Image (tube, rainbow, N blue to C red; front, side):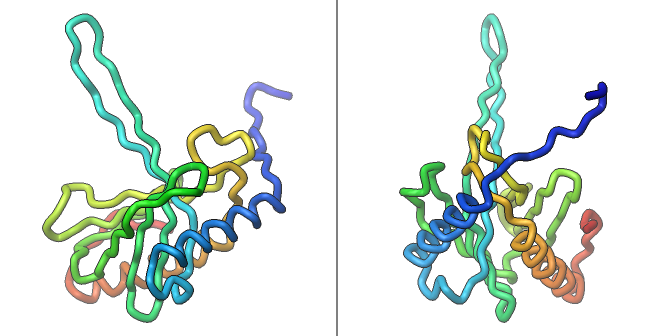
Amino acid sequence: MGLFFKKTSKFDEEISTENKKRLREIFNDAVSEGESYRILYAGATDQAFRKGLIADTKATTFHNYIVGYRREDFQVVILEIDRAMIQYAEPLYIDIDEIKETNYYRKTRQAWFVYKNGPAYGIKIEIGDSDANARYTIPNLHQEKERELFLNFFERYTNVLRKRGYSIDRWKR
């Protein structure tokens, strides 16, 4: 093993399939007409910096989401769930008419929805895989097929925004 070796991601395909089934059950339970959406798992992190008298601290919060999307009407739903896949929050519906920009960063697998009138950065989701040793995300999720389907949708979504006159610079697949 040399100095520059690639660490392989280990996951169990059977557990991954079971996790995907559980994500579908949760989504269908939380969202009306949930079965009409395609879904994938996404994560996100928030960092807060606090200045202290002696030392500065950084707090990181990890989020787990189920992202549902429909190609027909460009409806996107984001559902936050706990790592144990038991509890979930109220679904957040993202209407394409509220969005002015999308970004996708291939290297980090981050997708962004930027609102016209809303938070400066909008909503960030990370659509990577997680291996069996994942500490803060749902472990054992391999979703290459789901990610490609979402990126096809996301590209079409972005093209609709471009046709509406919005300038989108940071979108590379």
